Image 1 (cartoon, helix red, strand yellow):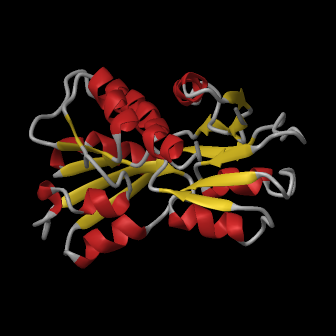
Image 2 (image 1 turned 45 degrees about the horizontal axis):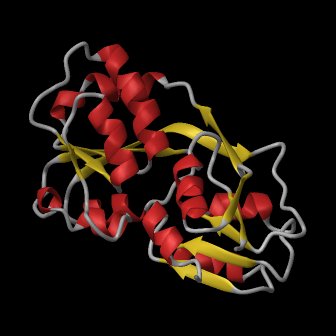
Length: 232
């Protein structure tokens, strides 16, 4: 049995912790980040009022879907029809379903590259795409869609801040990191001997630059992939 630090934001790590416990590990939930909603600017509000003019809306995370859909519901008593509601993975798709909408998302990969391969994004020339994300998020997908001659709008709905009570016990065996921001919040607090499981190559590269101990790259931030990267 190993002690595993789960660093997802508050309220978002319980499912992973339950799976770790069922697999014989001892999970410890210590959020690295806290999520703070951002107010809508006048320009962003106007874009949401034009929601029915978009071809697709992409939510980069469950946090993005939760905060964006709440903001949209305040402006749209009935959802516009004909839009593609895109998610990066199952947890984000679940938030879309809770709003009564049908999500489209990759069944593997769980990243922007996999989302770009969705059929509804194959021919987007002249179409409008809305990306809902956190402040300072990755611009890769927006750049690729613009290369395909789409008009892309990006609205940040929240920001991630270091959690005030973040810490890492000295006797922890493994730390699970799902974002570069989460790593930055914890870097320097993790014992050098601890194994770090990083969600994807970009996060793993950020961890490896600062951490002297072993770094394992999970296929994605999906719970199944994070669990699969943990040695038995």
